[in-house]
Every structure is written in structure tokens, then in C-alpha cells.
Image: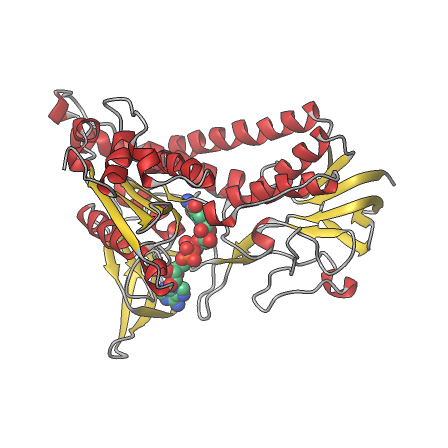
Length: 462
Ligand code: NAI
């Protein structure tokens, strides 16, 4: 039995970042992780491996679509799927080992095994019971199940199985047009699979600014991804040749079936808190399975905290990281804070889609007077040079004060560009502040400035 200031359960982006910051602030910290490697879902079976496959298949797409346009002639590469998966695994290993190194550097103890909390102040791992002043639950989330669909991770898969299929399917049905469905759908579409996305709602990517979502769907359709919208999936089953999905169109209740080699279920995730013993401890939960916390990440039981996907808010690695850092500050007797109004969201397709702050729909709902500054990448020289001029930057600003309320970008490197607006929003900037900032030419960032200019007297290259 060892004594710690803080024991964190879960070594995903929330848990490991919390651990490192808490150790940097002088606390004696341990992290319990039962998976063989650190980094949680994000590094092992989520954000990082999917980015590796997105990168590899994007390169392939570039070769097929754009190389000859640039005078790069010659034989097109063929895909060695096993090697592509090995590359993905190398990327995972490089990152998970990096966290191990950071733990050693910061003197964070890794307690290997699965944890439970037998009593406040105690964490059980295997047969050992450790004590801690603070216990942090950072156990993340797992794919939510869909009635009538049994996942076998071979033919009917979640994102985990989709990252390690035995072979490239000829056809793929994706259930759910959310982030996972579209990122993984893009990977397999670029590898030649016929991809059909079946979505319950009448638009893709719920919550995204509607104008951007519409443009996004159009671009993905051009890339060959098919969409069946307004379709409630009733079930999916494995057949002799693959799987079939049954759905009902909501507009007329008509029943349909669609067959594919592989079915990806991407209908959302739910908090993963099983086995911790929270019920016996009396930790209060919310109706949708999240752990209830106050503004300082404290649960209803003294000394037990929770962060990340296990509590309310967007299920994003960087939201968990920010909560982890803030909580470490709080546990060290300082002030930790997360600004939930400025959390970017990114979809890593090509083009990327990124957003921060309010959507136009939200502003309308709030009855807020706003203005829109938009700029198409068609007017951006750099984007045109790399065949990525589809898409636009849209900045929403208060009509009276010009303060930036939100930004939505679909286009090259959108996931990086968005941070310029995030910083501006953190500083309470106006669109004019962005517009008056010198931007290097030729860069994609100029499109952000032009959108900011469009909130005022107008963009230059429009
Ligand atoms: P999601 O919540 O983003 O999307 C799920 C979609 O499935 C929704 O559009 C929903 O309407 C649809 N759906 C639900 N039930 C259905 C049914 N019976 N028939 C047809 N459609 C149905 O969930 P997703 O994509 O699984 O992602 C899970 C979480 O992981 C999200 O919170 C997401 O933000 C996060 N994530 C973030 C990434 C990123 O930031 N790049 C990458 C991957 C995941």
C-alpha cells in the first residue's frame, strides 16, 4: 500500500495531462491504467491512429487526383494494407511511449491494472489498496450500442475495429454521420471502398453550423461518399457475404435494406464508469450516465473528482486535457479554470472542418444581433496552388460591438487555422482586431483575415 496526494484513474488525455501538471505543481501522483500502453482511447484506438490512416490515404488521393496536374508522372502506388496498418501502429507506439517518458520525467507512478474505489481516499488495483487525498476519475468513454446491432469488431465494427480491419472492404456502410463516421468513411472511400453513410437526422454532423455542414456534405459527396439522410437504423446483422443494415426512412416510414462487406457503427459514445464501485460510494450520476460534478470537477463524494468524457460536455480529448490541467491547479491549491465557450472542434477529413464558439443557428435562437463575414478559399492564392480552394471561412461577430462570437472553417488546414480565432476570442477581440493584424502572404491564414475584413468594410480578394 502506497500513499499519494493524487491518484488518477485512466491515462487518456484527461488523466495523463492532469497527472503531469499535478506532479509539476509538487504533488505526489499515481495513475492507474489497465491497458498495456498509456494514452487511453485517443492515442491507442482513436484520434491518433485515425490521423495516421487519414494521412496515408490522403497522400494516396493526392497521387491519384493531383500529381499529374503538377507534372508528376509515373506509376501510381498500390496499397499494402498490412504495411499501412503497421505504420499506424508505429505512430501509436511512438506516442504512447512518449507519455511513458513524460511520466518518468515528472515522477508520476504508473499503477498497472484496473482500479476500483472501495472507500473515499482509497484506490484498489489488483490486491493492493493505495491511499490518496484526491482521487480523479478520468475513465473516458466507450462506443454506445445501438438496439438490434451486435458488434463483433470484424464485420460489424466500432471505430476500434475500423482501425484494424483484416482487409480493405469493397463496400462499407457507416451508421451515423458524426465525426467518427465521416473520418473513417473518408479513409475507406479513398482506399476504393464504396461508402454509404446512413444518418438519422436530415443533415450530417449534428451541432455544426448548418451552412458549413451543407457545404461539407456536398464536398464529401463529390469525393464519392453516398448519404442516406433521415434514416433510422433498425438493426444490422452479419450475413454469409458481409452484413446488412435495415433502416426506415423517417419521412414515410418505408423500410429499406443495404448490404456491405463491413458496417461501422458510429452513433456516439457514452461515459465509461463500470467497475469503479461508484454506486456503492453514492457518487451522484446524471441521467445520461455521466458523473455529476460541480464547477471545480468535484463529485458528490468528498475527495473524488471527475473530468473528460466521464462528465458533461463535448467528448473531445482537448476538453479533457484542459479539465485535467485545471483540476491539477485546484488540487494544488491554485485556481483552475476552463473556458467552455472557446473549445474548438475539428473534423480531420480533406478538407478539414473546424469550428469554435456559436453557430449561426445558436445566435438566431438566442435572438442575438450578429453579422457574418465570409471568405471563400477561391480567393486564397495558396489554397488554389494546392488544389484545396473548396470551402470558406465564416466569422460571426456581434452586430454592435464587433466582438467575435464564433468561427467556422471548411478548407485546408482548418484545424490549425481555427486557433487564431480561439486566441482572439480568449482575448475578447473584435473582428476588426483580426482584420488589422498583418498576415503573411501567401498563407491559408489570410482567408481568416479576409473573413474578418468581411465583417467590416469588406474583404479584398472577394
Ligand atoms: P456523434 O455523436 O458525433 O454522431 C453520431 C451520429 O449518429 C449522429 O449524427 C446521430 O444522429 C446518428 N445516429 C444515432 N443513432 C442513429 C440511428 N439509429 N440511425 C442512424 N443514425 C443514427 O458520434 P461519433 O461520430 O460516434 O463520435 C463519438 C464522439 O467522439 C463524439 O463526441 C465526437 O465528438 C468524438 N470524436 C471526435 C473526433 C474529433 O474531434 N476529430 C474524432 C472522433 C470522435
